[in-house]
Length: 190
Ligand SMILES: [Zn+2]
Ligand SMILES: [Zn+2]
Image (cartoon, rainbow, N blue to C red; front, top):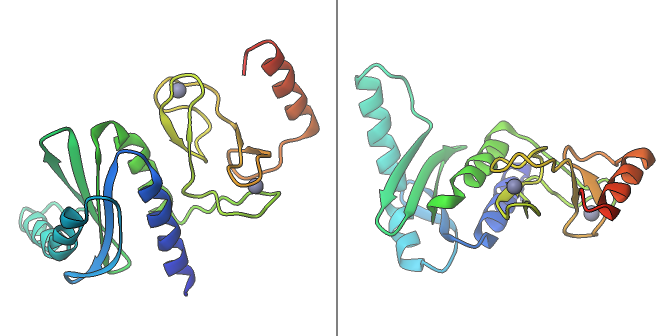
């Protein structure tokens, strides 16, 4: 498996694990390549049409002199959204509940920008790992220093694989940082 495939594989795996994601599918010219999620029928349909949908929107956008769009969003009844985008000649479609919009956007951002976060202790990939904010319950990507919803300080998070506290950018926290964190914890401030 190439590095690109592994990255995409990781993305698909983590996104499909999020509660409220109905499906995620990766396809090439209408042929499914990777699919995950409970809504199999929807996923099949999306992988069949994603490439041509994205191509149509791209043509339309060029005609209107707006340049190439990077994504397409479809609003569905029942507070669902389908987002489609192109990644390395592949078409990705994700159906998710509306409230997941911010975290899905951040995950796609990490994928496209080539961001890689690894746990400094167990070396597992944390690039697409999501963590619930302990204050408001909103889902955040690992490399986010603050909760997008309530603004809480989320610079230190537990690695879901080894349980150690890791800095949001993948660094080991210093002894001093850990000490402050533990003191805050004792007083209910973290
Ligand atoms: Zn929050
Ligand atoms: Zn770890």
